[in-house]
Image (cartoon, rainbow, N blue to C red; front, side, top):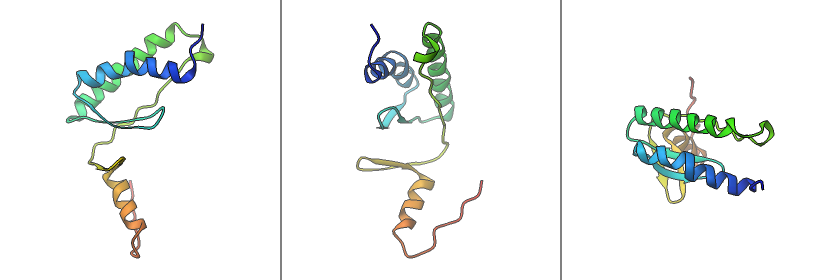
Length: 111
């Protein structure tokens, strides 16, 4: 019997995602249904966690029909995270939010 999508995501998180987050001392800052914002004290730990997470998903998906596979994209940000109440943002996003409520022109950012 096939699990409902929310149950499948819950099982994936419990079995495949949460263990490496704990192993590499990550802290879940925010969840957004199918998204996570996780803080690590080291970018190396973040990369190791992401690699293990993707390996676990590869193993899990190997036994799953193509149409039923779940694949994740992982982005790693190497900067500050600002947490205010239930909201979290990177330093750049936080600055942009502050400027949005200001009469000043927001900063121009370039890569």
